[in-house]
Image (cartoon, rainbow, N blue to C red; front, top):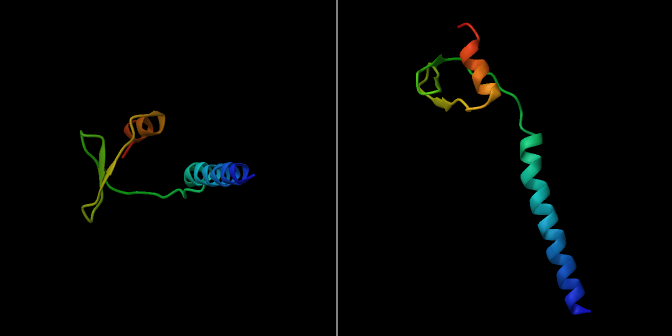
Length: 67
């Protein structure tokens, strides 16, 4: 009986951890970043912060949009 309780507790904890991991991607809020794009796939804002542009379809949109 103790083994079943332990298995159940571990299962619940694992389920919650996986749910939290995937929820961060779903609940992420969209933001707008203004700056200049350099040749290293980075956006540099006026205050000097650097954001990496993803090497994917969305990142390609950054390169194709006019400045």
